[in-house]
Image (cartoon, rainbow, N blue to C red; front, side, top):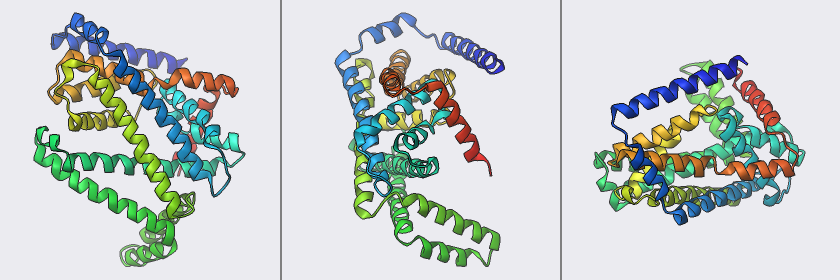
Length: 343
């Protein structure tokens, strides 16, 4: 009850602050509703379809990660993905471990093994997004239209180099983890024996997680799925932005910058309140990139509704079919998250 009262008070305070801010910047509500009504429905539908295709690719990728442990058809894992993301949309980021928990329950594998899969999945997500964003900023012609574009282009090249080095390092750890851990331990030992031992254990633990990949073929397949999945997510953002004619100034590079900004704002997603903060972060990013305020907030609201909350109807259907209580698995996922954070 205390949590509910606290959350309700936070939501009311946030809405009051948002209303005050809109009055300060002379927010035009009639223009806002006009933007929502006139958004191109075909583009919005394409945005939802590409997001749904991304969930299917997540199931395919997880099936690839499961191959060393058990052969599981990707179609059997779609429910675990959409139910997991539905829990995050409804209850916040603390329920992000619903997916590995459900996969473990579905396949009969241990939860710890699926937490290792989840960690590797996060690495592939970060690597793929870094590759796409860095390549866009480094070589896309419209990157020159960004404010301070030279800094963005330099950042793109540096990010691309860092992403490639990170991918190569992860592959080397998978193939030669023991040798790399020993080299780093010997290199750090003159500085601090404790630090050297900790670094060795960290690398070996990372290698254990990378064991979900049997070899170079699985690595390439997982990376290919990741790149295609994030390309679909980016396409969804582009479709939704293009549904608003007044956001014509947001070219591909600007949409990428706005998307990454929004992703950063959603890292600490809170129940309900996080919906409004995510709209605010994305809208401010668009406004900072030269877009008008009212269509920016309208697009921010539809981006949230389609890319983040659009999974909820499908997730509820799968939860009913697979006899999953969202509230129960969300609570169990929070306990896993708390246990994982303990030293």
